[in-house]
Image (spheres, rainbow, N blue to C red):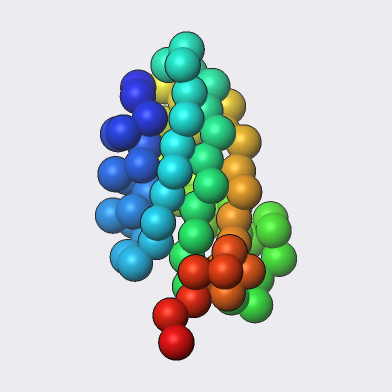
Length: 80
């Protein structure tokens, strides 16, 4: 597994989302995901949305994924 593939899966699973993914060893990754879908949700619910985009890869090909999840407003990227 590689960071570009994870980024693509997250962004296709959360339309309009923006993801930045890093990970050098192929099994441990860090991601920052900005998505409007996170509005009004607690961190655990936000993480579950991201995990759902990755399906069975979590715990398999992706051993660990550290997440930062923000709405565009929280990230300062909201469009006026």
